[in-house]
Amino acid sequence: MMETITIDKIEELDRAAELLQKGQLVAVPTETVYGLAGNGLDEKAVEAIYEVKGRPAVKPLALMVPGAEAMERYCDPVPPQAKHLAARFWPGPLTIVLKARELVPEIVRAGGETVGLRCPDHPLTLELLRRAGVPFAAPSANPSGSESPKTAQRVLDYFDGQIAAVVDGGPCGLGRESTLLDMSRTPYRILRQGALPAEDIAQALAEEMEIVGVTGGSGSGKTTALRELEKRGALALDCDAVYHRLLETSPALLGELEARFPGTVEDGVLQRKKLGEIVFRDEEALSELNRITHRHVTDEVLRCLRRHAMAGGTLAALDAIELLESPLAARCDFTIGVIAAEEIRAARIMARDGVGRDYALLRIRAQRPDSYFRERCDAILENNGDEASFISNINKLLEEKLHHG
Image 1 (cartoon, rainbow, N blue to C red):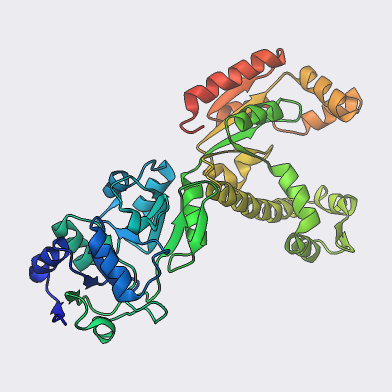
Image 2: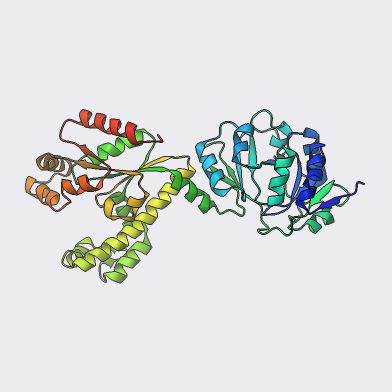
């Protein structure tokens, strides 16, 4: 049996780097648990990892790398979303699975097409990666089926005399493996829930998504603009439709409305006429209703955006008459105000909803004037002509403004 040496000073890392370059195994600390590291480009070293751990050869190994710059060296393609997550969470407990390049040995991939990349958040191991100049194949440093080690001593309890060295970086803080995220195809999938919550990953992807706000009065043509965005792969969310869906599916929303406006919910159904009689006579009550509904709609829209992001989506569009007053306005990268002449809007509403001209005009005049949107939106689209011209103008604007899609 070999003697397993312990390295606990940064000045001694060159010795560990030399051992790894020669195909030896060295246990290394991370922020989660200790890993059993070998040169990830050396098939014999990887074979030794499987042998020492008693790990089934059908289970692939991830590669430790010193940073996001290594992604394109070992993987192709690398989607922009993967780079964003690396910038956000590396070094840290996230392993990103991508399509592997041919230089990644088949034994690391267990015969598959993908490889996981991980950048550990521990200064000794990051420095060792830089000095060794090779990626580390490094599963947890325990025999398969045993508890993952959180200290160097526990590694020695398992493998003293079977590996060349252990880098003692002190106790691991998290004590739980990294989260394993497959980004080699869409939708993205959590293959193993580890120390990084799945919700944090989805939120980070959603924050990177490009979001277009579309607003304007009834009959202006917002739906047409949304359709063109959908053709470009956007998730199109009509906030009014989201609200009405929540009225049918959200006990939390109905409960809050009943608590604030007693008698407006009967047998789980909102009595809109009763609610209207309260809020349209009381400006403070109307403001309170908007506060409640905006919060619930915002939460649901953000959930939809996270789901779209995990499906690989990079573009979304939000349609709301009151968008600029809602919390969602802050999430939009730019806003488009769609406007049209009053008589043209009235004719569209009459044809769409089967109502008379007087009623259509009442609805229009109860809404924001065109000047409101001109002053507050990043771009204005006038829709007073034929649909083909309007669509052409929409797409010219989107070509100019969009970065994704």
